[in-house]
Length: 388
Ligand SMILES: Cc1ncc(COP(=O)(O)O)c(C=O)c1O
Image (cartoon, rainbow, N blue to C red):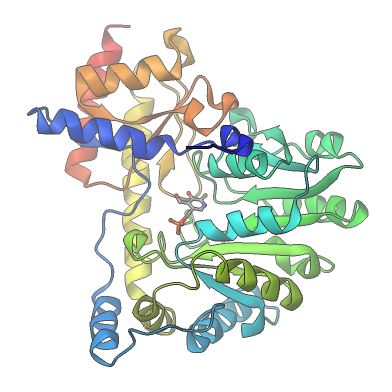
């Protein structure tokens, strides 16, 4: 086989590797509590599952236009118009199999060799991976615990050069649960406009937000819509990770280009999943709110539990379903702690470094699990930390 040079720049997602290891230990008879994987522990709401079954029976089993099933693109545009208070049209929407391809297509469509992209670290590892893969230069801004895992605008500003093309943000944030404030977004928007930059906003956790917080998107700030690409999808909000259904929202002409990239990759997202997705967005949203409430309850349990363990300090996140506790007092690396928790306590987690080098000193737990399992995991973690 011949392997192209750019492949050596490709990163990966640690969660899938840790999941494989945890499954192997389980197969050997070990009890493992899965706090490593980033997916809701709920079933997809019944009305959406029913809609997919009906769509199959109704013959939605054929090809569609590449940008997506028009009623779904309309539902997405309506949802965004309603929740963001500015107008979106279906022509600005491209539906993809999961949200991830949006990132892939956008990096390939916009980043030339040597172009700089400013992105958060720690963060979802696919940002750094894809920037590097397409030949761009990945320029990290650090998310610090003492700042609620929000960026420092002066630091972001200092990283901008003539070669900067794009800034990436993710709020609520994976892996820290950090949420950007309106003031953060306003200042960032000013930087993007002043320096004529594209802005990529990953809003996949926008509806998993706590303490009465109201979601604010940077796209609503005047001068931003024409330079912003939004990533969002059904995986987290509707517990639909395995359906692979996501979307991007972007200026019309750019959407045509991204749809063309999709023609060259996957053609389109699965037809009956798109039909069900439209019904999901247009239907009663009680299930989404119930899941959000449950996540908030679990967040409180895990944050309080971790903070009562000697040697752990856990920031209380405002969104998503992850905590990113500080384990620096142990003197051990994130990887060592994650290994000890897996092998000696049967608790699967991810080292902070799975999200970039600035994740050292932290581990990530996903609390999308049952309350009983979370409580058992806390007992097991406490037993381990007692000995440090
Ligand atoms: C921050 C972030 N963006 C994007 C994605 C991708 O979502 P999907 O599974 O719909 O492709 C994830 C999934 O974990 C994520 O955490």
